[in-house]
Length: 465
Image 1 (tube, helix red, strand yellow):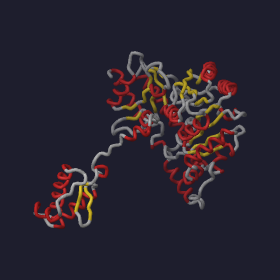
Image 2 (image 1 turned 90 degrees about the vertical axis):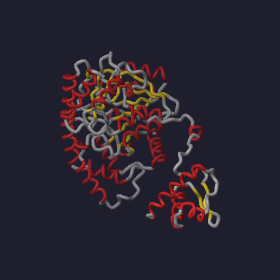
Image 3 (image 1 turned 90 degrees about the horizontal axis):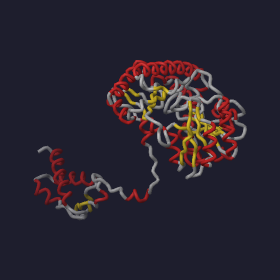
């Protein structure tokens, strides 16, 4: 008999025997096992060794092998139910965010997601920037806690107004910035105002910080000032989260006049405005100045991330804040993660300081405009019963109203079966949605032909979900 097969067979036999015994029971001696199974002492030794490695038995020199206590058996399912009591009801729900980040199955066209398709990313130029960054003499040294001074200067110059490098804190991407801002500016259990609809990641971040998201309605020009003032008065909230430029998911952009109204309302309420400026680099069309450039009172906490325009793995963002709010934000980052890794900061600095940055933005803006127009035309042609909220001047998405008689969840599921992924509208609302909606993204597909095919599949789902 082959030695290896003998070991495997004896191990399997003893494994079954161990399963019938109680913890602490002694196995037959090696001599008895040799006799009972007609194998060599070496085979017995190795079989017992395998069971010990699996955590099923323990050996005691001079005494023999014993069935291990149940809690140490690696092959058994451990009982983790005690954790439910210890953890309590503090749950962080990541289901809506993880759904947006999950890669589509093979053969399925992504009409959802929040990042650029690899074909749109400047991967080669980023790799070159990373190579240059890694040759810098201090690349592995600890960076300043608030970020590299040159990178902070760059973020300040991008925003204009009277923003200075000392106002900037470098953090690990826009999502981290949102969490830091919520924790720094609002106490757990208090309300925070959000545009409705709004980005699901922001709603998840607010809930994770223990905040209650309160919806403020929008129109085609963004958040409605009169309802914003009422919401501050009714709730007593001291924080508003706002995406004034190419809002996700609607694509709305606040006019300069409305930006000034929002700032005046927030100042009157003694409240902060968290400005999520995620899409500033996702257009070649002119856009109004950021809220922070219009703010002289420390009302605005501004978030400017490089991630959306470059790569999901280049998680670098600049947060602008002034006064005690800035100190709280810095403390939040310090106690949670210390600082952003220096090689990542150096890579970002190398890239945005090179000609490749502006070339990439110009090419990206042109391509995104083509994709937006292609998607809008396909939706109009294939889905005449649906309505596009507006065709924005940039960004990554179109917000689509479905016919009232359709069930949103049924449509989304049917689209998935037809081979097209879209985002259900309900996840963008902190309260009840006004009707069936979907967000359709044009940046995740490989090319425009795939976009058109994706809309064809989506239309099929609408015709017979």
